[in-house]
Length: 293
Image 1 (cartoon, rainbow, N blue to C red):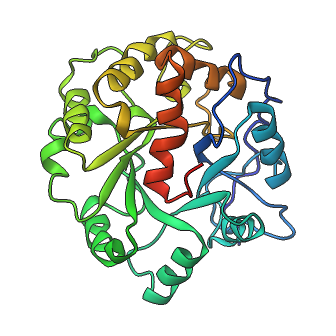
Image 2 (image 1 turned 135 degrees about the vertical axis):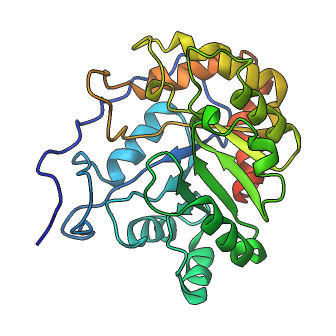
């Protein structure tokens, strides 16, 4: 019997165009895609139901935003990676993927994912479900030969010595959503400063994404600006941008963001074309192995 919830996540807005023209080859480095349910059935034990969107909806979003390429982060509603593998195969060179795995994954499956365009795996350290840090380190040893990275959803202030904790991690690390900064703690907070030190070490990357997840100023997210601007000032070569489309599992009471507004935030955080080209093109090309434009 399925334990899936009966209520779907809200539909995302139809995006408005951003106020600036993204550079050629721009990359959305964090989105989730879904296929038609008849073709890609959900895991019977999924803990959420996504909005009724599919790959063509996301492709239309990219056209509206002026973004050409993207990185698909595996959606937990699926027991396998078929939807991202099929989409990458249908658009050679345009997309990359990040898997969500169990430590018991076979070597054959890892090789299949790598051949299909997957370039890393994700572990959620916030929810407490799934792979823990020790397990991620063991899996990292196995995927190092593929030049993958390990992507972590974490709260920076829960890891005030993050730079030391991850100093000997076997592969590159990617931190989601600016480390989900504590808005009340400020940019001098121990965890946020540890994140900056980790990025400066050259062993990690960070996503300028999902400001609405931790912001208390909705919908403008202005309280996030100082954190993003501190990251851009300190480590512009270790940052990528992501939409987090279609914004599933929104906290109660928080309004659905418009993806055009989310991309416009990058113009606030990185006010020059040169900085935006690094964050939208050069950095994700290097991290995910895209061909340079």
